[in-house]
Image (cartoon, rainbow, N blue to C red; front, top):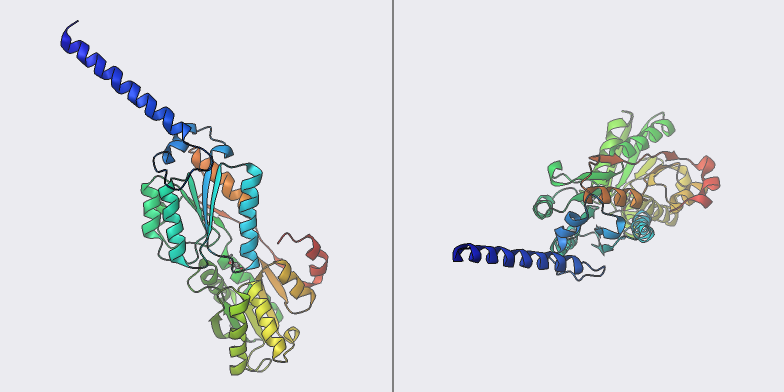
Length: 344
Ligand code: GYE
């Protein structure tokens, strides 16, 4: 054997052993409670177990948008409980307090940590292109959960959530029935620029009969506390029963805030046509009490679908680009009967 050949063989042997050591040590470092600075082991996780990854291999990032409503609380609980039940490797959960910049920072931290999948409920529709591109470049699939984004669909894997336009259309149909002779309504809308508020507002306008006008529309940011002064301000400007006959409210929490304002002003909410969205226990109670005439369902219990899809993505399986929740409308007639079995 020539010296040159021997030298080449030795070099190959040395390189192979270096690679083997590197691979085995990266697997060993994938412990359940890894700190946020482990960039290298990241994409290895899915690559090493795919296509046979299990929930025990999955690290999922859920940068929750806030805790503004009972719907949101139920959504958070669904994600946390499902993670627990399935025994996933790690759930990285954060609360952005309804601030997009906080959500973007949380997504960036998850990218740096090298999670397997990011499931993002975006507070507003616009402004996600840059961070979604960063996730894509890092090879981390993103599932948009709940509200939609305006970014190009090539930047995320799928959207799981409700059809917000349909919810607005369903509300319009209730007003068309209950204000058959026409009238005027007020709109208390959700967070400005959010997929939920934009969709519900569009849906309402799509289907509202031409003899019903929208007198005014203001945001209450999906919270009870912010809806109350908005309703008070409406009452300073418009006379209930004279200037307006109904109120469309984008979620139950704001509906409850609005009812407080109406009652405090000596107005019986039951004399108006109030239609809300979500179908929370609070909304059901408002129907039992005679304040809401209808409550359009929006289901927050998305945990099982989110994790199932995340695992499929990790294993490189094909997934549906859009998964819409099947929903209905609830009425006062059977609200008392259904209330005890409501899960949120
Ligand atoms: O209707 C509201 C929450 O995005 C569907 O956000 C969700 C909405 C829900 O604050 O209660």
